[in-house]
Image 1 (tube, rainbow, N blue to C red):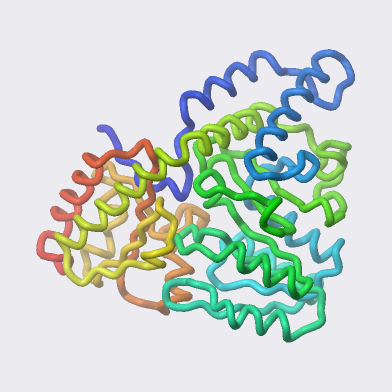
Image 2: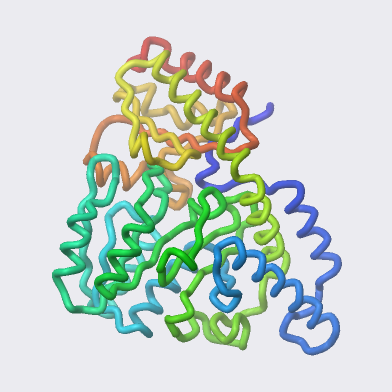
Length: 380
């Protein structure tokens, strides 16, 4: 059975071009990049070329890109180093962030007694910019604002330029979890003042276990992982050469093909929404319909016994979707984002997320299967 994969916000399939780069690297670049012999120097050279590729895509200096194991490590590094090394005593964030950000702030509250402040959001998850400005004006403490560019569960986008300008105006640092946005939206850190941003290869058709953090050159922090002198003394541990090269290739392809991919994915998302609205009653769509990530469609169905088992039923039918973030030990824990916005609703939320590899025929098959599972509207 050919499965239909509509969970690209959780992770994306590796592209053939990326697999080729990684496979060739595995057979060629076996030297330790920290060694001074030929094999080591060769390995170091290709890592630095990959760093240059990623830096160029983001308008950054190569000295501002540090390789990590992925988005969670990158976000932990940014938040915890900002408190430990940059004197941050206050963090403004929202309850809609990824768990790696929320739990990092929890840890900083416990271990460093930082002040935690939450900015207001509306029912679509949009940031209340007037409230953010008031919060920034309200304290003389060294403040970090941590807000994700594109929400991973409902797709709502923040005003990156507006928030960056507010932070600059009030002397605050700005960290953005850009894991869902890198490779899908142009980002130029030379034009948008930002202290930290983060990326993970597996969200844009690269390998798992490879990511990076951008740290603005004006901010000097100490190593997050102690050990050797790797990553310019910022992260001990032998570099993941194959993952890094695969990540650079995937990001290069993502931006080279961005207009075509965006047009196709947007068309698929809009087509699914149209078909759902045409075939089912009492649907609610989460997030910002006018300014949301084009790869995501979060929809909630009214409560019913059949809706409660919808994820499992679709999986058995060969269709992969999710109810929320993929970071809940494989359990269908629902969406903490939807809960924060709408409370403990009995409705069943489904997150459909797309890539340029998906097709209209797959959308038709998903809608047909939903009609089988929920034959009378959604009441079943």
